[in-house]
Amino acid sequence: MKDKIEQVKKDFAEDTKAVNNLELLENLRIKFFSRNGIFAQLFEDFKVLPKEEKPLYGKVLNEEKNSAQNIFDELKIKIESNSKEEKDNTDLTLPGRSNKIGALHVLTQTLDEIKSIFKGLGFSIYTGPELESDENNFEMLNFPDDHPARDMQDTYFINDSFLLRTHTSPVQVRLMKSSKPPFRAIMPGRVYRNEAISAKSYCLFHQVEGLVIDTNVTFAELKGTLVYFAKQLFGEDVKYRFRASFFPFTEPSAEVDIWWQPQGKEGKWLEILGCGMVDPNVLTNLNIDPEKYIGYAFGMGIERMAMLKYGIDDIRLFFDNDKRFLNQFK
Ligand code: PHE
Image (cartoon, rainbow, N blue to C red; front, side, top):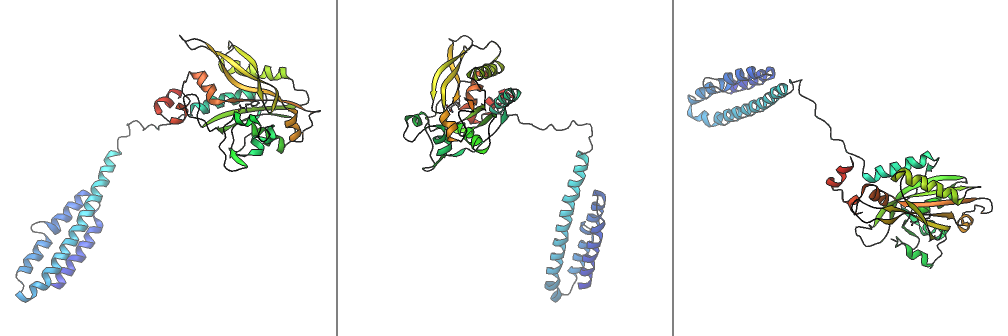
């Protein structure tokens, strides 16, 4: 009996190797597991064993059969799933699956447009970090300690000397520290202000800074550049005005407003950017000779530009990642 069981075990292992389709699998089943199959015969042989041998072989026989059955079941699953895959793959006329491609965020699109307008005017692009020193963000820009001008911007301080930059103007400082004029660059980036969140203001937003320094720069050039920019972004007919203003790092300073009148609503002037001639104190702070060089600078909020351009009335929409909003700018 023992030899017989061993032989069946070997035969089963040998036969299994060749089974690779449903037909051979069925043959294997009939040969070993059917009513007249090899295992059934073994159990017949077992029945007529002398009484004292039965406990010994009963256990072995059951174990062998179960293990063979398990191997058979696994083989069955494998062969069935293979043959299913083959069937699925055969329809070559099915159209392909399309990839879902994302779109650029409306702020990125607006920034790209701003960049391309200034690139056309010969500006290069320069960037700086969002974590800034107090020195670059305020001091070098002519905001002395305790000067009330610091209250213009509510700052997130990291410690006494570092903060999340409140504007992109410190990138001007970095540019002036790291290389020599002439400069003609724009500096886009994210800025932070500790303000109450509302439809109009958020704790972070994006700005584009501009800086031109050369030996023969004029306020007229600053005006011409910004008017050209406004017309490119908002259309040739845009109505604009320059209004005197104050920034510690420019003198004289101005703000530019455009006339804004959504359909069916009353029109009003809306500020789009701040600008001015670089204050000689700033040049001196950065070892640039104010007798030789003169410059202008400007800074604008990208969210503000996008809100005006697309008629968006809540700044929080840019940061919510609501697909119903984002999909409108695909
Ligand atoms: N940094 C100023 C602001 O954030 C904008 C500005 C930039 C004004 C450059 C003048 C010159 O409000």
